[in-house]
Image (cartoon, rainbow, N blue to C red; front, top):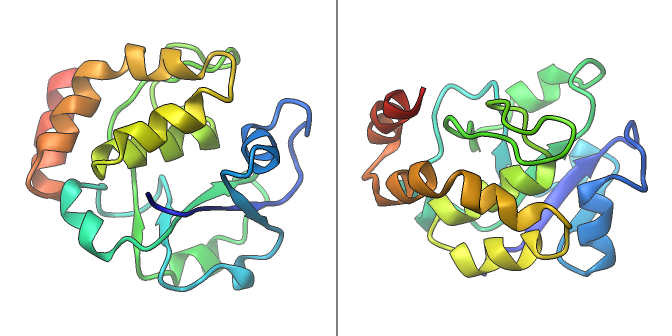
Length: 164
């Protein structure tokens, strides 16, 4: 089991926020400042140059989602982070962006990371707290299974091209 963290800037509706739901369920620890997040945490960053792969599991102590508006995020602070990874091609299952690639909620992103890192049961557990959550795994079953079998980031990128 991998501890889950999130940087949250309170720009979204707290009633719809997947991270707030997971926090209430005791599954995620929220932070309001990036400086509070351990520097050893894996940051899920869609602008990262390297894709997440199973090879990252050995050095992943915690996973941090950036649950914020990308228009107001201080990207300089994120850019300086050493251990950040982008998720490969996946489709959103959330009601706002259903079927759109790369438009995942923070909970979907965390679940995808967990599956890729070999923690599928934990992914299922967090998604069970969100009404439409399990649909994310169903919608992305084939690519997630393939990504979880990859050796490294380059292989994940090659696999991703099959699903575009």
